[in-house]
Length: 140
Length: 140
DNA sequence: CAGCATCCCCGCAGATACTG
DNA sequence: CAGTATCTGCGGGGATGCTG
Image (cartoon, rainbow over all chains, first blue to last red; front, side, top):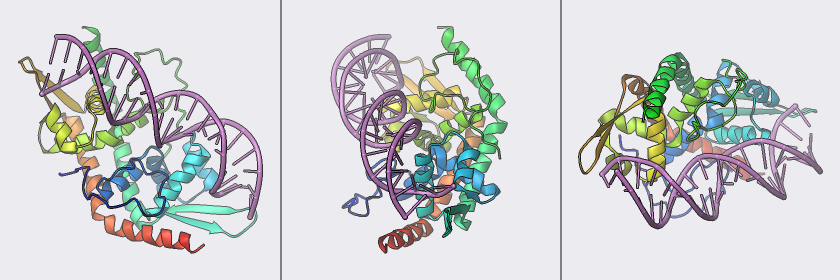
């Protein structure tokens, strides 16, 4: 499938300090970056949650559980920048910001969700495989 | 979709020092762990490559590129333990070990690949979204 | 409430060296 | 060749504090 890591020898990381959430600063094929955003620890969960409905920031935080505010912010920003998540900040006090999926994001989210569901459904088999593996190991 | 992180308050991490590649030592719903294995940086690439055909260790290393030997080993072990990858060590000298997908692994790999392909196909839109985002940012 | 800035720690992951 | 074992760094990510 050709997922080479090297790809173009980009002349410069001259662009904006994309800095945050860049999982692997070296050069690699650009789509791999997006893939990593989508499959990232919190990215996965955010996408899945947003598939149900729009969420406010802290709603999302509670829904996912165990995300630091910082990571959630970072994740949302990355996904927003990639055009997967839409951020709607109402100019009211106290601030209210709603996050939702774009059309693009919905496509990604659906795939991610189906992978998550698959995983959940196959847990039993995985569990058995693990026991077999561990047993075989222990036998040494 | 209920992807709560807390899940069961497992009485003990008493089990084997699963240690390696455990992404998040605290308690969380077990299937999330498998999902993280599958969507992990190298897990994704390994699964995709193996979808084509079985690979030997260093073949795989070259095919993926930029994986340290150590991470590849860890990834393969994790996936093997989860029953997604089959390890076939021929008792010859020099050693020869072939890695391939199990049926379970193939199911996972296909989903991962389709996600990867989707990402690749949507790069253009993502790129545009990014430019729009960055432009809007800069305007402040 | 949303989110930025800072500080800081732990563990992922790379590099290196050694073994069967 | 296919791993293990050990050391180390550096950055992911949590905690805390402050602003609009």
